[in-house]
Image 1 (tube, rainbow, N blue to C red):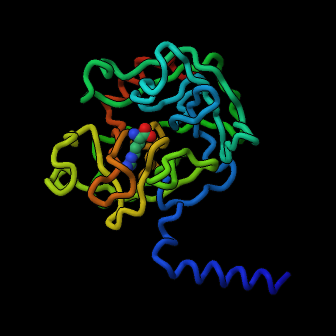
Image 2: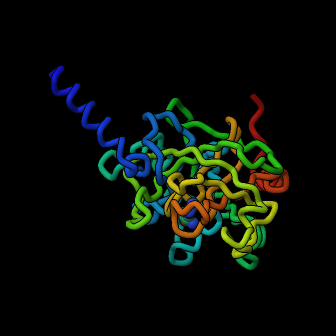
Length: 263
Ligand code: ARG
């Protein structure tokens, strides 16, 4: 057994000398420890994962507004609130039907508006070790160079684009708005406005991808943004685009949510 273990280790080490090793697995990330991200929600239609989300209140999940448009009209998603490994066989920790979807004011008519949506659950989720809240922290901007973690069940292969069976996380670096809007990057298509932030990595090996939308961007321990868009995945000059949880967004959330119960 010892022999096997050490030869396995050797094989892994050898494989990691090759360039592909760092871009295998979200893109370029790794699986998170079970129950270590108990605020993660998976938005599902017909049992299929379409977007990530964050439990911010026992009865409310924050996600991306465009996740609404992926489904036939009038259909409400089910939310699997889960810690990790929501494989079809293991299932989520708790599965709750949604009651209503509230996209950020005017999102549907104005695509430049914030890509944010609140999902009200039919009943409050029971909070426990495996199901917990993550509170957004008002942040009006993120400096270029800031390291952030993005978490989700999104695609791990930019060419296949099917969701991942396991929950993954990757560290991305904030890119200045000026660079992100420059001709070799997005060239103002779309315009990276003050409410948005680009984050990726210089080699293009670390990124969010299809299915990660609505998931959290956590910077220095603060829940600061949501996955919104990006052209392809893992392309250094087309980094992920995130919605900033600015004070304006937070004020909107506060208006929609009931007051937190007194402690
Ligand atoms: N819009 C995608 C989604 O719905 C997220 C794309 C992220 N793309 C990227 N290159 N970071 O899941």
